[in-house]
Length: 339
Image (cartoon, rainbow, N blue to C red; front, side):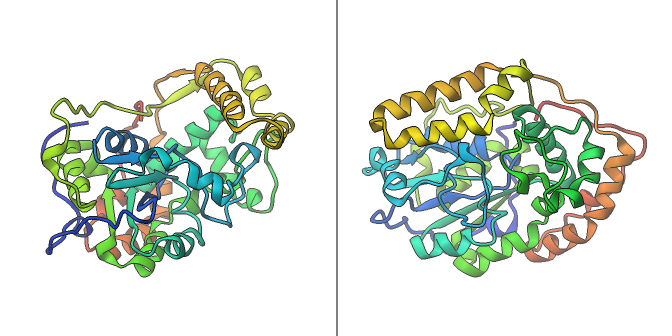
């Protein structure tokens, strides 16, 4: 990612000064998605700011319509609140859960929790987001079909609960097309919070001009950009990965094992349960390695872009920004990379 200046989208600009977020209700800002659009990187960059506290990522406390497996058990309110105690003295306290954007309920639930909250949305060209999401799921076991084309063909069956593996922990995420229907998702947050409380960041800007986009986020949160650490670096975070051992992944992701681990919460003291949870996450992290993603077959990419053209046009109208290049067909080229 580059540290050069960004040309920001219309929702990034605030003609009037943005005042600090009221500190009496935490969390007071949310990164709500979309997946594979730079949220992990922004989460980490914000955590490095002295006036920001970022809670553990992907808690998904909100979004009652999101149906996760047991490894993503929904936290009760007291447990959720406890995740923010360490940051009580910080001016901005946030959390990042990338499926809040896809949820049809999360926007209204967050609004009811804290109507003054600031919302950050990150978006990427739909076709590449879907392709990146497919490889993420292929690595962590949610996806089992061995080609992106097969996964797209299976979407209709999966909406009916078919063609799912035992390890699939979030079948809703396998509906790649719906995840990429950004316009309605963004509109829900604009309707709930208004444009002054919602910031939309496009991957195009974030990837090319990371430093300036980050500075603009800091200002959006009502913080002093002068307090950004001088040693701040914007390295690539959350690049493409592949699993080392499918057997170990199968054991760690087994629904019975996950359900049993969740039940331990009622028997183990909280600190001990967190150690068990941390050990499990550590094993999962040790079982992956960086990998260069397979090239995206040009014909398939162009087909998907045609299918998503209407969605891109709707988002362009909503944001007031020309995104027609997201739908442009490519001629005889293939794209690969680490992100």
